[in-house]
Length: 417
Image 1 (tube, helix red, strand yellow):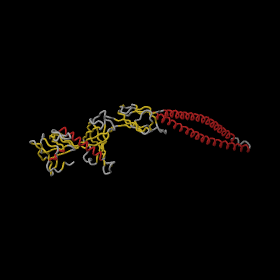
Image 2 (tube, one colour):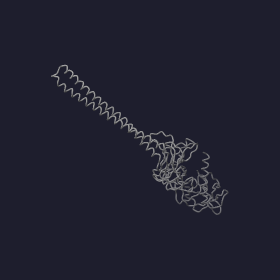
Image 3 (tube, helix red, strand yellow):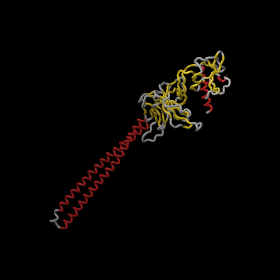
Image 4 (cartoon, one colour):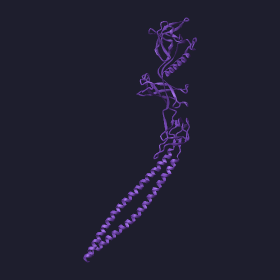
């Protein structure tokens, strides 16, 4: 952590030195920086620097498909677009080996066809049984009518024959009733038996549809126009971009398709600066990989809850989202970026480097070159940043002052950091 702070301080001092060297005129010092500086009227800006990562506003994550009705451990990539390729909507992004799915479709189709044939056979067998039962039932009805006709002769025949006719009638009625009850039960059993096979057929048909859908899942198309960013996968002990022949697990991330026309930066905001940064503040975004590129930005969102630092639980950071205005071929996701959020801007004011001013008994003083020698002069200070301070009164544009303000006799301290 100390090393990081030292690096930040060194970079800040180097930046101030570069800024001062552009606005300074005078004799040079031992370190190559002039010992005098001229009072100039320029625009003043106070900023706070944030660091974060570039991300796309709109993106689509491509995952290895999860197959319905199958337990697949891995899938083999047969075709995949390269990293950084621009694609259009409905372009094929990645394809997987579909041999297992084709085989599954054929197996499910065979099961379905087999069940369809079983249903036809059962329907034929049930139709034959129904005809036989109806014939038997019709015969029982004829026997009952015959018994009833014989019962009409009971008054003119012998009593024993009449008793036989009664028994025949009762037997015919009982047989007909039994056949009708049995006939209904047989029909219910046959319908249930047929329904079981029909349910199996419907399930097999759905399995065929699922298997066909799984084949369609083996080819993934882009849902939008954008840029392909591959997601590294483990290959042995290394993280590499996926390529043809690699095996991936269902549900694993393969790539992102991002819209490069709208980008943003997710940055960390220290708790000491959170009170100064607000939504809608303007900013400048610089890519660490391409320092010469500068993009205008704007603070869009600041998290309401902070997270603890990995160095100390007492240090907390808030998440800030800064939108980037404009686009560039080099503006890609996952690049680190520095964001300068503008806290205060003053136009056409007198500016001096901070090291030219020293506090003497509560009064800001500078050494002004007059008549060939330096004379201390009180000044009224305004806003200041890490490098410069605004002079509200006490100096005029074009005056030359000493950079090393500590030569003033009785100086007690420099400006507060």
